[in-house]
Length: 244
Image (cartoon, rainbow, N blue to C red):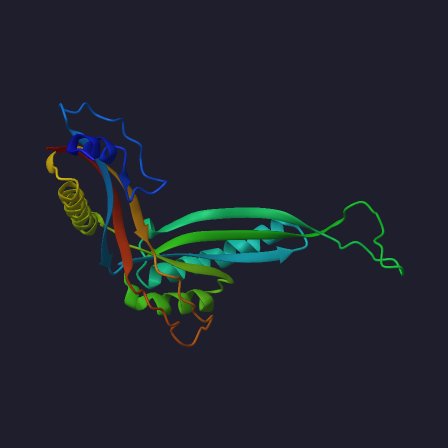
């Protein structure tokens, strides 16, 4: 096979390009040049510095007003408890507020079938949930226990995040481009060509959180939490021009 034929064949190859890679238009090549598309991933590990979780209160009462009043009183205690242990107003945000009727269950027949009857409201359920950002991860367990002691009966989380991921993500970008260039050089040498220039660079990717840890619902001892590390990564797709 001639060098020109091998270059033409190489121009059809997409090296390690995932299905989700961004499609970019083919640029104009110089004479006798080949187009090589390479995808590479860069990844850095970063310890999270923010934990996000939700905490709420659910109340039931015979009337809607009674359910709302009880819920409001209990949620006020929960929010006050969060503020007492140092959670700032900007880190507490209402994420759900609902009031729903409670219906009487359908009565079963001796044969196991249900009696068809008009739905009958027997009470109401009010729920209020806030999303909380915990910036002092070492105190996360104490925050959870404080919430339980204050009356929170709906708690879920945590989800971990890095408040400023840019430095770690930039390092991942640099690593990804370096890998892409090295692969391009390898393919060029194998084809008897050389890397002439970079034609385009596109990016995709994000971060991968660790599995959420479990914690115990206790008002007497800190809930155990391990933040671990998060992988912040990007995938770059680079188009190279290969020349004889």
